[in-house]
Length: 299
Image (cartoon, rainbow, N blue to C red; front, side):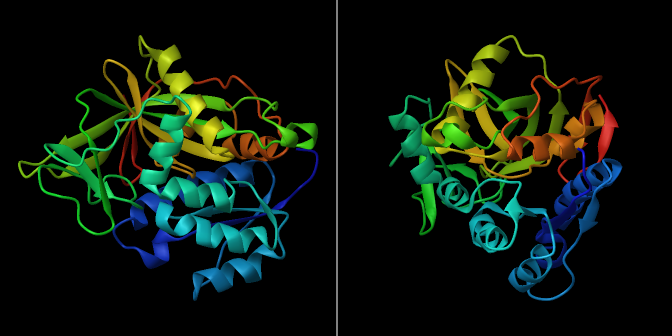
């Protein structure tokens, strides 16, 4: 970049959610280091009410980014948008993506393969506004209040990490801007207990998959339909088709592995994407494994 920016990074879990705090701290550390290597000044929230800290600090920043669970992301992003330029997904899109039922129906209407609803039988039950694999289980029991049930697809669990360009100028009138930048396909490490409860342990990146073109297209189609911006993660199951099972309009744990392999700086990519011109492709060297709490080791 040609100028130094004040960038506000607000990560929710480290001070407010002990279960997700290690993951949140790892994502924040990667982003902070990248912005600082690029010469920018990073501003972090202080103690106290998270929304109030966003309002206080964002007003003195040139741009900002919220890192928070899906159920809270829209609320806090909306505060950020009142005070500075948002480098992440817009608050309205974040709200849509947080509702797993709404997201699935929108994608299905636009021709993106999804598992579909399953009112009975063996199926995956998960929170309507969940994060990761928390509360996700394979069961024949009915979904409880605040949960949804979808058809269980046996297959390979992968995710796709992308950065979506903001639509600027004439491109805002219809989708004619630069397509999303696919950073990597990641293999997810997911286990299932005897009682059907799923657990996410991290993953491996980058993955050279024989169906990579199909996987990439499904992810790009999903984020394009939903109007995502900034860093996004699309979870898929590869079976007879590539099924999109979740769209995360935010920084995901995969960033710690990808940035360990990527020659480009994620900070530069996020800032460029906010102006509609993120680079494509990016260049990855080597392969790593990353844990759910953000630890990275060579693969």
